[in-house]
Length: 525
Ligand code: FAD
Ligand code: KPC
Image (cartoon, rainbow, N blue to C red):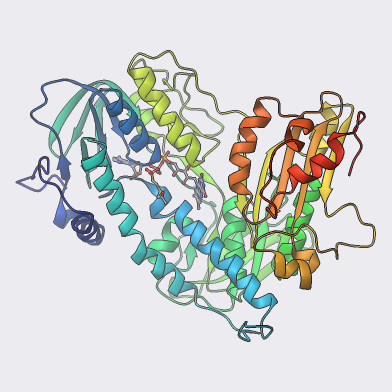
């Protein structure tokens, strides 16, 4: 990209969001034709306090914070926009697909009833949704550039690879930049499967799906993996009406800490027709003779399984992009490939920091954004200490699944007196009870009660503190991010029961706690 003889500095020229949008579209179409997008304040004689290499959530938030503190930053990204993978190929498409999965489950459940059209047996287009996302994502990208330049006063170079020359020097767009500190924010990429045939056309990861899907997949989708991404995308493929087979090496959704919650989630996926094969190791993906996938072959507990398909999705998790850090001599965790940092986000090389997905789990937006800002604060001289601990978490199937703290099994290992409150209550005759009942599950609650969700909260019966909470339904995720703060501060059943709920609400923990908070010795509900 540095082939461009004249590289224009956009500093001082305000681009509108619309102009950014056109520029980004053109650069995504032909990066070389547009060349580096430079926004450097050449009038500022100060040395840079930090260069952020990678302008995703971690690099952008770190840059914004450092700038807000009065420092001087430069952020570099090879994409023509700031914001990184979340809006380009990760969280945002995942939420589009998960919303489709939830809507389609509703439409299929009530197909031909009430006002719902009859869609029995209908397969809906996956490509249309992928194309919709690809067309729609540039607007948010443009806002990120506009906000970063005009409102956050950040300096950046986009659509250009950064080359790190030493711990203080980066070469980009044919110029060398020097800084007191370097912050590596290079993100992660989809893990490879490592079997023959994974490069065939028709085999996708979350990255390639949204860039290159150029045909309508046939009747069968094969998903390899059993974690968040595999389940989220698999639920979408299933909801579009395709036979969806998930090949999982060990167990599906091992990350869900509570056994009952996991069972509810997996049972409902199976009800929707998702075929889950646990203990399946894929041995090869077969070519149709024209470079396109035709079959997946796996070893299972019941012998070899062959599945004819023209569409395979690899959802095996992510691996940190740690090559540049390794080349610089930074310590890398051999097991995870993550760049090793201390509580100030500093790598083993003084003055070189690393943040976001690059430093490993949890690979989540809160960690990317927060670690970026903490690195900025450390560089600007604040005494900080950052280790993510006790964070709330979520995923999607056709539902939204949220959790925090311990699952019941681990809680019972750690505490002698665990008290649970759950909805629906333990019911030996099945789950056909229209509770929990709340927004977006009311039709299920009345007509298909077992589909209306599941929730459980766990208390230490001695201290009366909340030690875990689990929710399957819709709309509770927001509550969990605040509930988690209170739980970390020692929230008790009595305090929870004393809160003022906005009934009907998706998580019934306040009202249910109130039914028990009066008890001196807590009992299950
Ligand atoms: P990124 O955003 O990936 O940024 C890294 C940047 O570095 C990129 O912009 C890249 O272009 C740039 N770069 C790399 N190499 C170079 C180079 N040599 N020169 C210049 N630039 C370079 N998290 C949530 O909290 N909620 C969700 O719902 C969610 N959904 C997800 C769904 C999927 C399918 C996936 C895969 C992830 C999801 N995540 C979600 C995780 C979230 O996307 C990441 O945690 C977050 O994007 C990480 O931000 P980052 O800044 O560390 O990395
Ligand atoms: C939907 C959305 O907020 C876009 S993803 C944000 C990227 S960044 O603000 O840099 O974390």
